Image 1 (cartoon, rainbow, N blue to C red):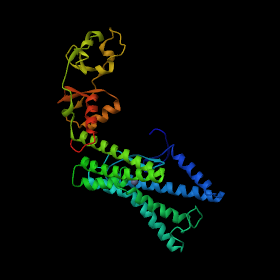
Image 2 (tube, protein in one colour):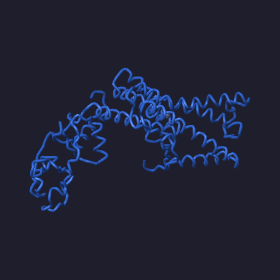
Image 3 (tube, protein in one colour):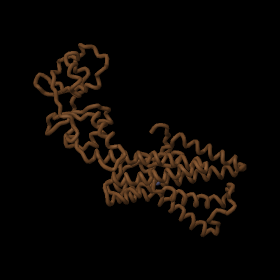
Image 4 (cartoon, rainbow, N blue to C red):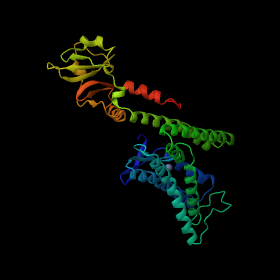
Length: 362
Ligand SMILES: [Zn+2]
């Protein structure tokens, strides 16, 4: 991902850090200054920061390793100032699998908190923060209670029922046990937006800019989550056959650009055939329209080889991935081995725009 550097890799999952994570470090140092911390106090604060950062990483690995149990891979884990994100390659098939994956992250934080609680108890050290800890008083006695409290906070905060918080996924997966996933997402994203508005409202009213920012962030992401789920489900439910363009026009592959230019307006794809009537290449008219191509250019020079046409029974999701990877605006489609039409990127885009409208009815 852009703007990130790779820190390390564990269990085949790269951990990336977004450049803006550096801002947090700056915030830590500003906080140290504001509290008039001594040199050792600043070091303790940095240590606290590093420990919390590790807890966030462990939280994300909680998601990633649980997802792996359900054959869902994690592309990477990204650390940004607003927290970590484990980018799963897809949503798991079953709603209860998503539930466990979502709960695994906060569970890690509760596990850490529980372990620290036991250790502190056994060592007869204070477990809770002192009442007068308004100012940062970090030392070897207070750092563990801080970490304990922060882990409980992390678990609870992440369980807020608002995307992209884990609680939003918990809510969605619970509802998806009883209804279609995109409808569950629709409801969950509205719940998320309500939370976001409350955060935003209180944040602005109290002048708590972090809270207001979190509200804004949740509001945007709730909509995005709905959109991507809706599109994903739509693509999975359909095959190429449902959306393909059945127009097939064959032209001789020895023709030149100017000889077929009049066909461009009415045909998205021209199929080129050799003297034995075999289709060997195809021309995507949108690719070359409006470009300064000399009239005498042989069509073969602007054509793509047919290669392996996509089977018309293939799911739209896979077709979409292939077109995206190869950056193709059209791809030939075959029915039982014979070219039966083309799948057009423009049609896919139109479909996705419709799918992403925020509404309950399809
Ligand atoms: Zn999480």
